[in-house]
Length: 219
Figure 1 (tube, helix red, strand yellow):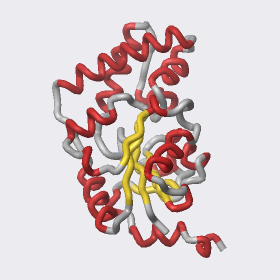
Figure 2: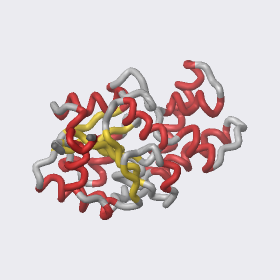
Figure 3: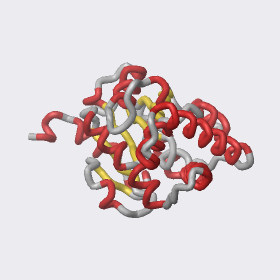
Figure 4: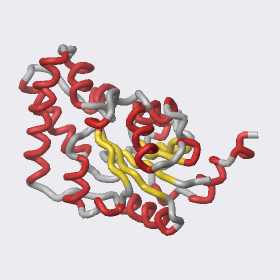
């Protein structure tokens, strides 16, 4: 039965994607590399900053780490200047599942996860928080989702995860965790490998999530 829901932070819980994109644009512009929204979606979204730099610029570990730290500085500067927008549909969904005594966790490849949740005033809505610094391998490795299950003290068969990135969906599959693909951009096909794809959490029926976790559902 449904015992836990894991939420990716950026793009699912909070609308920080535009800030990340802006920070990446600034970084790559300084490196003389063209960076578009399409490149962000296909090569950067959902993975660690170091892996993202490697994917776009082809840097080795040392150069990628330096560039990733600079990108983080840009992001933090932008973040300091504005409030963190929380998606209202996500808040409504969290309230519903908490009433059903379902545990919640939030994951992020960013080290700023707790800071962002605190600034948004929603840190207390989650039973557990997992950042990319706590796992060895980034998405599409299952590590971060399995770590969240471990912290929640739940088995993956009793959990759903919520993702807006293709690599995040693949990570859920690799973790054998059912996935809700959240298509904020309305491109449901992009997240077609998820077990359920929605444009808003208002479309999600908690009873159906529970039903799809039951062994007899697969028969």
